[in-house]
Amino acid sequence: MFIPLEKLKEYALNFGVLLDDTALERFDTYGRLLAEWNEKINLTAITDPEGIALKHFADSLSVLKYCEIGEGASLIDVGTGAGFPGLALLIARPDIKLTLLDSTKKKLTVIEDILSNIGLSAELLHSRAEEAGQKEEYREKFDFATARAVANLRELSEYCLPFVKKSGSFISMKAAKADEEISGAKKAIAVLGGKIEKAESFVLGEAGERNIIMIKKVSSTPGKYPRPSAKIAKNPLE
Ligand code: SAM
Image (cartoon, rainbow, N blue to C red; front, side, top):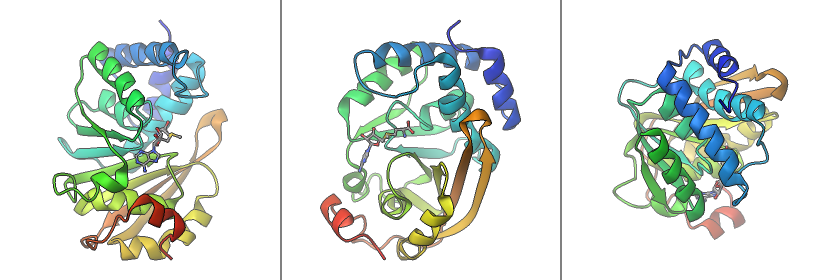
């Protein structure tokens, strides 16, 4: 056993998530492979089993406490890196139709290896978010988009909201100072067809404050968004 599974089970239960033996075994394999791959590719600064259980796995699962994700919902995890929160959500909820997007190919190679070792499948999409968001096959096609530690909420909304269907939601996971980001992103979110539905704050054990911001898609995103990355960076939506 690599991950402290009893602790992980307890963390998950605190978020109302019951992990069965299969899920726990998959998390254990995921954690072990993450630490192994991290010796070859820089994936995460958190490599101790305890830290992985709390700061990666439990943090990802917190989404399930605050957001109602229906059976068989489609979800795209934007800038997934080593699979957070998307792959962790899939282990807890194998019914989800998951797409994992990242602009770094080697991270998706790692995810492919993990998926084949745990016996689950997801669509892997090697692209920048702002390019995929302009493609017909991905635009407004998902019930949910998630993102953790990818960009400031204002820019991130331009990356993520175009993927979300009307009545779907973009779920943004943030550490501290979420209030500042929310006020700075409000106008951009409205322009992109979103509306902040709720922001939940909680303490992730010794890791400290965490925030989950739910943004509902209330109208279609105008066709010119997302703009090319240089424009988003140079001229953020105000
Ligand atoms: N979400 C993961 C987590 O919380 O551990 C990874 C966070 S990592 C700091 C940011 C990831 O976002 C990287 O893997 C990077 O390649 C990806 N990324 C950043 N900007 C992106 C963009 N515009 N489109 C796609 N991926 C992007």
